[in-house]
Length: 196
Length: 140
Image (cartoon, rainbow over all chains, first blue to last red; front, top):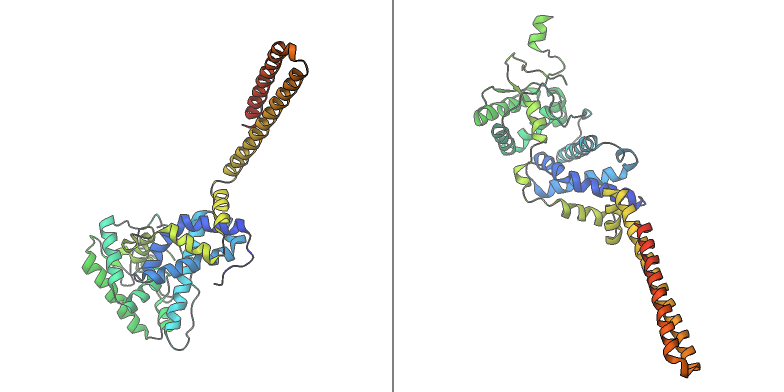
């Protein structure tokens, strides 16, 4: 994003105030996206706020939680673009869906300790596995979408995801196992299938 | 995406998508030492914001409009105080000069004229003080 020339001083000041308020939170998210790469996370953070300033007429009037979700999505798209540019060739890319920034009421809550261990394990898994895990469980992509985007076979991708789930369960050891809950296009929830 | 707690094989458990969303609100351990003020300073440099513009605009933005209004009131108050004080000093100087000139013209009556001049000056000073006080109260 190029420096936003010609923006009124008030817009820039308000965008700077937004950055002062949200940049810590957003930086934490950026660090998870980059697997702990501090300078890349800073770049993503700066790019997101600069994009916000460029779109301030729209973004400026939103409530803070919506602004945070928007900034997160901008960072996520930029990271996905960066992953794409790491590879040769191009692959069809599904639209990144809207993401929720707060856990839903139905979400099962892990205690802080277990959640911290999940964070540590996710940060420590290999680059390729962390990438597909992020696209799967954060962005909600199907296995076919990730496989096509990444240029790998669906079976290989499923292997990556299965090993990531196993690694998390082995190292976090939650009382209830962690599961891959994202459904693919051709799948249905087993319980619902039986009920139907 | 529908929230559910079964995987494709029917196993029950904690959805990983929920874990990822919950992690969003967790402070990242590696982020300790992150300085948001420094990050904002870098952004401002990138956006070509001037230091003066930064300070006043940020203050305006964060606490607007109350802070800006209070700031303007303080400025007005200072201006009024300055104007009132200068007026009072000018009036005292003028009266004293007139009294001194008159006293020089009539040397034999000097003590009486000097006393009269002092009395007039005291009254004017008191009046100036009252004016200043009223101006201050109105501005506040």
